[in-house]
Length: 451
Image (tube, rainbow, N blue to C red; front, side, top):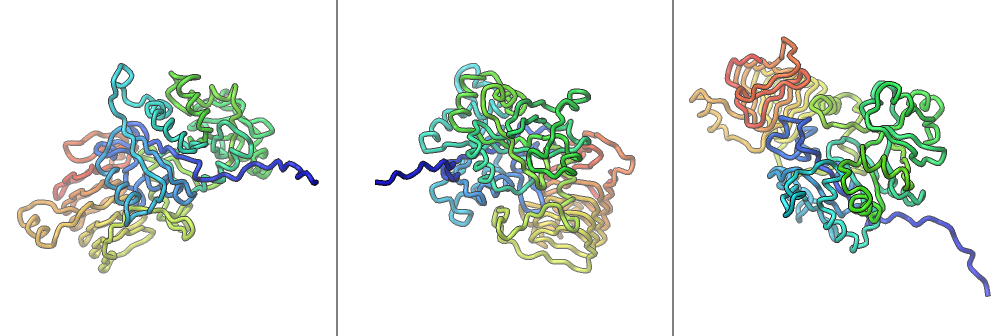
């Protein structure tokens, strides 16, 4: 009789045992006015995608099919997009999975009258949903942010979490001096365990967070260039640990990055996972604008298209774009556009956009339109001196974000030549944020306007 020697091998991570929670962000004040009429995850990006498509596509490509999306308010555009893209027969089919939007709601009692007070509080308000999920063999909960741009296989991350027998694993990036103080930083010991964390430290507190990043597998040269480890705000928790931390250990801590993680480090095994690839936080108007325009560069640091791990979006069944005598340099032109004798440089032109002759677009992110106007509608609007959707003749636009369905007239100049940094002009249909002009959704900019 032979005894089988015990094999000490960590189990293979199974995506069926993982649920992900996508945090749709607060009321989206940093992305205002793009979030004035929509939830942050529904903000359009890259010409035909929305922010939510990034974590959703990463989940699907990782095999994770139990997905909750937490948002501060229930926006029509978010629900419509999710229904069209991820739920039904013509979208991405889920089998035994689900996509649930959990919007902040009022519940009985004092606590129920408040908005989400932070990332952890948002999850706590729906703890009953996740306790229910626990019964359905969800062993690990992945917490994702809805305003990052990156491509990742989350199962590598979950496998590292299982291999190190961690209670919590934090996905981290190596970071240089110039940007370190903008992020939550962590300090690790020789085994990759996080021993300290600090939210956006400055000065001597920043220097104290320096660490030898070669422990995470960086080369000696890179370790010297990137002496900090920044948290990406992407976490994986053992389900029971998450529920315990939120409800029993720290019932009044409202935020993961600044409160829950630093407190949990003391008595839990919190591990760092190195993510060494393109990653951008696009939660502010400036970073959103820069990341979008960076997509047009050659070669781009990030591409939505990859044959093995495509990014999904709503199947709109639009005709190919029609281009007539245009000059287009370093640009992304989405489906269903009509471009006549115009010049587009270092810009993104979103779905169903119409650019008339003589238009010049430079360093501009145009989100496009939700619907078409017919040739006869356009002609009758012009005859009445009104402005159709799109950009009218001889209009020059630079350094600008144009939200959906904007109606920009003829001979308009949007250049912010006085270099105004901040301005609030909703009655005129625009705001200026960090020097970038933002034309509001459904706004009308009359013929001859100069901004």
